[in-house]
Amino acid sequence: MKMKAFVFPGQGSQKVGMLLDSEQAVSGTFNRASEVLGYDLWRLIQEDPESQLNQTEYTQPALLTASVALWQLWQNRGGSADYLAGHSLGEYVALVASSVLRLQDAVQLVRLRGQLMQSAVPVGEGGMKVIMGLKDSEIRTICEQISEGTVEAANFNAPGQVVISGSNEAVAAAAEACQKAGAKRVIALPVSAPFHCSLMAPAAEKLEQALSEVTFSSPEIPVIQNVTAQVCADPGLIKRNLVKQMSCAVRWTECVQHMGQLGVTAMIECGPGKVLTGLNRRISRDMDTHNLGSVADVSALWGAL
Image (tube, rainbow, N blue to C red; front, side, top):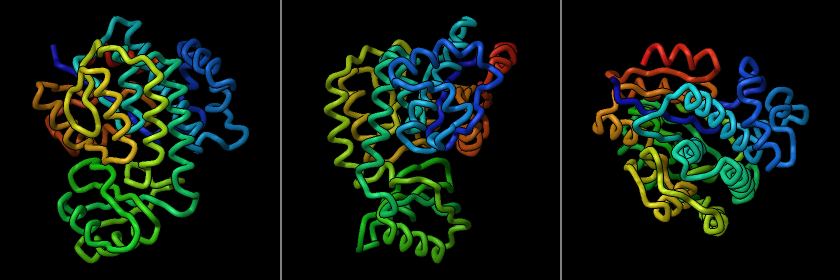
């Protein structure tokens, strides 16, 4: 039997109408999340009546609940995984799937995480850009050479694809320097704050306080964390790594490579969209990749694995 890892997407994979074809199967999970949040989360993702789905304090609970619901469909079928990981927000889904966190606690934490990330930097003063076609080391060096403002490598998504994050002027200067150095493309991300850089440090401190009040259990399935690209089994250290994740880079390329070194041969993206599947194929061409984004996918995946 193939050794398999389930991976969970981060912000950017949400869309209005997601999981509509799976409503009956996932309604219980959404009802539990809605009770905690105090609003109808299912209505939000299906209708988005007040255009809130792309606001991070709503995006994060919505995506987390959608991915957890799909994982629970897999579990209900009798499925499991050998390893788990998630990209940024997706790491919280991995921790729910591994029984480190209860869904109710995770929903509250990611709502707060979204609020803190948004308030850390005034809207319009920070941003993120994708740099395509340069080595990680080249981008790191360019960011270090920008003298005014803050700009850092924030997401190492795949070979030749790195996201930079920081204050607008510094991000623009670094992006221009990357183009002069031979970058194939530079793409501005439609985000409202500069995630995963040192400008998030004040938000990380406040998240640390909230995490200290939540019970974390030992993982039932090994979880590979973003900031170390290693398995972490200690609940206290898992918390500390989540705090670091707010203001440090997501080392996704290394996470996927490490899973390959551990013997993983099949990687399943569990959640809306196929962003991670595209990245994972670029990182490890030998890895079998699959998607679990609906009830129908559960049966198809069961047969494939």
